[in-house]
Image (spheres, rainbow, N blue to C red):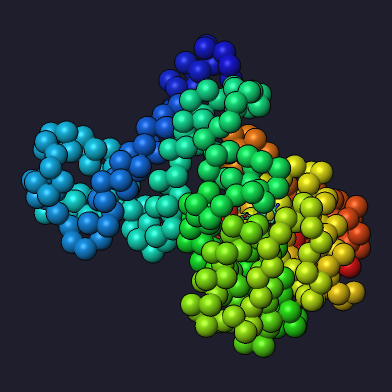
Length: 355
Ligand SMILES: C[S@@+](CC[C@H](N)C(=O)[O-])C[C@H]1O[C@@H](n2cnc3c(N)ncnc32)[C@H](O)[C@@H]1O
């Protein structure tokens, strides 16, 4: 397939022509992907998605409202239509396309899109990132716990941006986890790296008899505590501050969750975290690991290309297969592991480990 003569033949021959065209289109998508994502960034930053969710608008009205030259704006709108972010109606008005409409139902995606400018700046030199070259990356500054060893010296200001982003996107993750795994068989849940409490608040609404402990770095714990008090849940939820790399975990739980935590860390730290969870759990306890899993065919570009380069830029972490998580869990003391299917593995997969 690398030979020019074969490529020319495949394009000219009627039976292979559709495949040749599809392959060259797919290759072009790889080459052009950055312009596609930047088109989306421009639409989100201009507030176009939000604006068009209220009512379709003409080019002239949009240009006036957004203080944009019509011919310049039209270029962006055409790009967005071609990518199905927007759609041009039969009346010549711009409306949301299928991808733009999906952003309305999932407002947290806009937060993810906006924070990608950090990743893109780091990836301006992809080889430097992949080789793990010298110097702090933008993403390492954003995820404050990667910059120093345990993140314990961080202040609320250092963690508030990533904590907000995690809290917003937790809506989708919590829905997947709570639909896939029945927590009603448990008495007390420990959410390790529980961020601002978004998962616990969703679980508390679903399971009225479950008690909760949230464990996170001190700066994040303070944010969580305020949120839990204002939700009126401080009698059901306690917050414990510390580092899961250095401190023992609270031992009142029979189920612990590690949601989007392990993939942030290298294998050695993952073993420390899982061993701490093993020590903390009751003898009949279960550990629920929830994050996108490698080795799931439909999402390989997400786990291996997107997260692969993302974690390279973060300076630590990787996505793992369920078998890799089970193997580290076994070293940490867990006797068995099983995968629980979720509706959308791109949002999260689940591995349940038992003692
Ligand atoms: C990627 S976020 C995931 C948050 C949350 N579980 C979720 O899915 O929304 C990772 C969380 O682990 C916490 N974390 C990182 N290092 C930690 C450490 N050494 N000890 C305790 N928590 C830590 C972070 O503060 C953050 O809240």
